Length: 123
Image 1: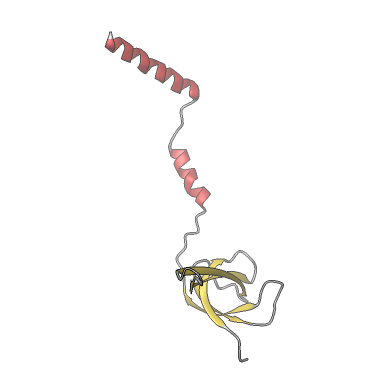
Image 2 (image 1 turned 90 degrees about the horizontal axis):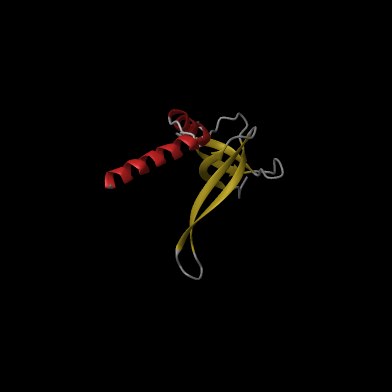
């Protein structure tokens, strides 16, 4: 069909079934200040076989409305992305387990002992 737009962008979410969210960045000149500004738009696209994953570079094509928000479908995957599957909360947990935090009573006792030794050293 003539007039169907084809754009490419990066997959930012693939948590829905048969749907991906594609982020497309384009440069636009500000009409008053004439500065080049990057504008990011997000499109929901239909991915029939759930082949796309986060970080992939995909080409999408405009189509008839598939659902309330979906008006695009995936044509091809141009490049597979490398995105870690580790959640940020899981990364911090390992550090917490390796470092042990002393209870407040022990910290207060240690501070008092260091103050006593400092005053004895001055006398």
